[in-house]
Image 1 (tube, one colour):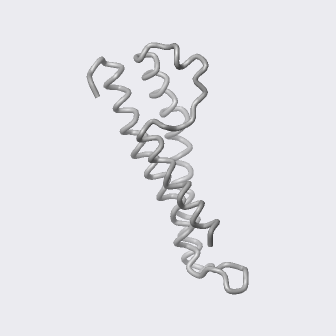
Image 2 (tube, one colour; image 1 turned 90 degrees about the vertical axis):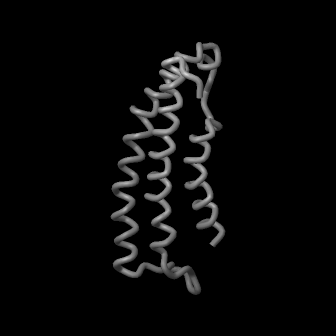
Length: 118
């Protein structure tokens, strides 16, 4: 059970860290750039990396969790968890939240790029 709770916490925390801009980045060069260049890098990173991967995981994750619901998947361990689809449905949910947070993150960076205040 603890692994399921840990994975849920981790998956739902991804969108929070992106929204609050506290995610890990290697800023050897990034820290020395102007705010507009940083905003351009953030927007580009969202469009090239975050959005496509999140869309793929959310799209295929919905089928993955729905399949677990259809077959009534339970844990293989004696006395394990029933209704495993609930745990598996956190995967697409978390990446849908990442997409939403990513658009907000990109919008904030777009405003920085245009010189507007956030």
